[in-house]
Amino acid sequence: MKNKIYSMKDKLKIDHTELTEVTRTKFLGVIINNNLTWKDHIMLIKQKIAKNLGIISRVRYCLPRIVLLQLYHALIEPYLMYCNIVWQLIRALFLISCL
Figure 1: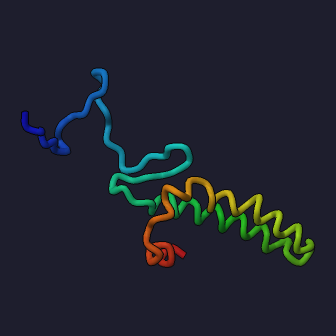
Figure 2: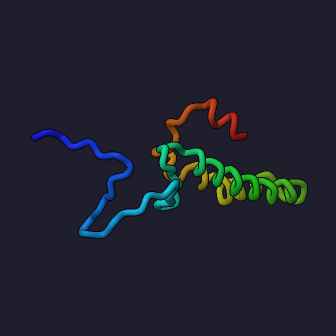
């Protein structure tokens, strides 16, 4: 029995329900696009981290260093750590170009 090669024009079905093709999707907080790259996910994380860094930078002269560190652990570190095992293997050049 030969393996059939499917083209993008073929309709995929599961239990007689046709699947629709999307350019990107979010699953458990991780965005992946149809090219299997993390560009969209990294851009979203970049925006969220930038917002929270803005908050920390506005209060940095008013709060002790230990409180600023706690804010970092609460507002920034979770975005860097969540599912990082999945998307951490991308090239450093791409990360640098996103900054």
